[in-house]
Image (cartoon, rainbow, N blue to C red; front, side):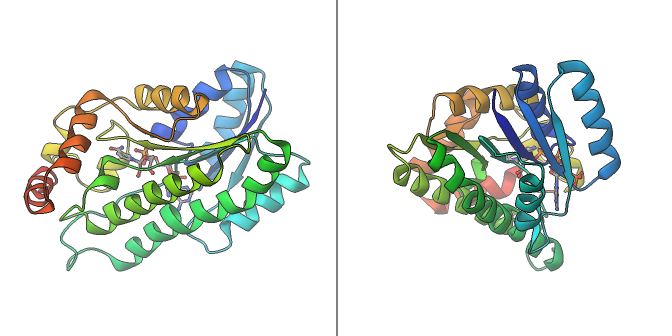
Amino acid sequence: MDTVLITGTTSGIGKAFVEKFASMGNNIILVSKNRDQLQHQQIDLQTRYQVLVKYISCDLAEANAADTIMEKIRSWGLSVDVLINNAGFNEAGCFTNTNLAKELDMIQIHIRALTALTKLFLPGMIERRHGRILNVGSTGSYMPCPNDAVYAATKAYVLSFSNGLYQELKGTGVTVTCLCPGATQTLFAEKANINNTLLFKLFVMQPEAVAAIGYNNLQKGKRVVTAGLYNKLLVLSAKLLPVSIINPIAQWMVKM
Ligand SMILES: NC(=O)c1ccc[n+]([C@@H]2O[C@H](COP(=O)([O-])OP(=O)(O)OC[C@H]3O[C@@H](n4cnc5c(N)ncnc54)[C@H](OP(=O)(O)O)[C@@H]3O)[C@@H](O)[C@H]2O)c1
């Protein structure tokens, strides 16, 4: 039985990860912004799965978020065996029209908080020679995306960072996996106002299926996993084709 810290648990892929880990008898630490939802989620999970569930209500866009989370977990006398860096959102649109504050928050959450949480929890895992980290990237990790330029750039960081760390961690008993989902039926597209784009009309996966793929590959200590056959083909084409061809296709798919 592990203690699993998951960010972005109140909906979508993170919520599906919570269900998966709790149903396997693991203790869960939930991290999201919405305290009421977290409280409700805690009671619900404890009732259904009889596992220990703690929650931390926190805005990961704040600079000291990772320290706050670490201190709270220390005060409970718990250590983290599995870290799922999942929280995120999208601010899509032509860069000259998008909201800078939201884009800077996105950089904080996808890059700063993810890096800081990894930095803080990794040493304990290495000391115990037991740990797994999963970072949620995207098919956008593989391709620059017009009309979603900042989002795709943050997810490119997630993939690159995870890949580099994977190699460093060989032989330590700790692994890092980057999960790259494509369009998934969560609140993500609605919040970013991209649910009517071609991307979210074709081959949309369910969050439970994405989390199951992530869970299985995390257990195997896989380096990178793309969720679903269609997304695998998309990633393969991004690897094979020049950016001059991929760019207009990506733009067409997220055209609002
Ligand atoms: N859905 C897709 O098509 C898709 C595709 C590729 C990658 N992804 C990635 O998958 C991950 C999960 O997204 P999702 O699709 O499951 O979206 P979602 O349903 O909108 O869930 C996002 C979760 O992140 C939390 N969150 C957002 N901002 C936060 C903040 N500042 N501080 C703390 N928690 C925050 C939300 O909690 P609150 O409500 O409390 O803010 C929510 O629990 C993201 O990293 C996303 O980039 C999604």
